[in-house]
Image (cartoon, rainbow, N blue to C red):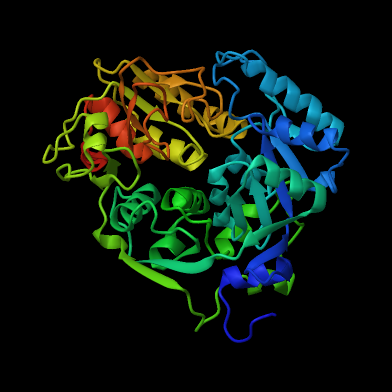
Length: 462
C-alpha cells in the first residue's frame, strides 16, 4: 500500500520501484542499473550462463576492471596478484557473451566503479543501482538509492530486473552550520561514525541533509555517502538539487535535460518523519584521523588516543593517551573510491605545491579514481606537482586500497591513507593504516609524521 502524507526521499524512491510487498516486510523492487567488477563479475555472469539464464536487459548492466587490475603505468592483463589475470580475461569474455557494456583495462572510461558511474551519468537521481561492492552507496550522492549486494543477488537482478529486500528503516543525519577551513566531507563522515559507532546506521537508509551538506560540491557529497557503509547503513544518499543536475548535464548516459517535473519531486517533504534523527554541528568539527581497527576508532587530529579495545591498540601500536600529532609514518597514500576524484587531487596538489615529501617516507603515492580523472589531472599539471614533491603517479584502480595479494606497501609500514577502511590487513599484511582526508595525508607526507593540514595551509599561505 502506498503511504499518504509527507514522504521522505527514500519512501518516494521505494514506492516508485516497489513491485509487491511480502508479509515479512520484504519488498520486491525494480532495479534500474547493475554494475559489476572483475573480482565478482565473471563468476556471476558465468553462473547465469551455465543455468541458461540470459541478462534480461543488457543495456542496464555495466562492468569494469577496477579491483584486481594493477595501478602501474602501462599495465595490461598481467597483474602482481597470483592468478589475477584470470579475473580480467574471464570477465572480459563473460561480458562480451552477455552483451553488456564493459570498461576494459585500458578503456578511456576505465576507473573505480563508484567514480565512473557518476562521471558517465549511469547513476541518476531517483534510480535504483546495485553492485557487488559495499561502497556502491557512494552513488547516493546523486539522489539515487544505491547499495552493495552479493554475487548471487547480482545474478537475480540481471536475470529478472528485480531484487527482494527487507525495507530498511529511515534515518536523517543533519549537519548544521558550516565547516571550518581545512575540514572536509571525509572528516564529517569520520566524526559521525566516531560519535555513533560503526553499527550506528545498521538497518537504515540514511539521508544526509543540512546546511553543511548542501554547501558541499557533488564530489564531496560522494565522499560522505561513500562512508555510509562504514556506518553499517544499507544506503546513504542526498536529495538532488541544482548542483546535481548541473553536474550531470551532458554526461553520456544522462538525459538531454531535466525539465520533466518528476526530477523536482525527489526530495523529502516538509513534515516527513524518520525513524531516527541525528544532528551534528558542522562548525565544531576538526580534521579527523583513525587510530584503531575500525572507522569508529577516529578522533580529532589534535587529540589524544582514547581508551579502546586492547586488540585495536596492539594493531596500531599506540597506547591510550598518546598524541596523534607527531606519530611517525612510513607511507602516504591518496586514492580510492572515497577520495581520488579530480577535486580531491586539486586540493591535495594545491597543498603540496612547493613542498617535498619527507626523507623518512618509504613510499608516497597518488592513484586517480578513474582514467578520466587521470587525464584531467595531467592536463592541469597536477601530476607534475605530485611527482616533483616526491609522490609516485599511478593509473586508476582499487588494488592499493583493497589488498588482494598483489601490489603492496613495504612490510610493517604505518600508512596515512585517504581510503575508507582501517581494518587489519585492509592495505596488506602487517600494514597499520590511519584513514584521513587527502589534505591530512599530504600534510603528514611533508612532515613525515601525522600532521594537521591546517598548519601546512597556513605555512603555504605565508
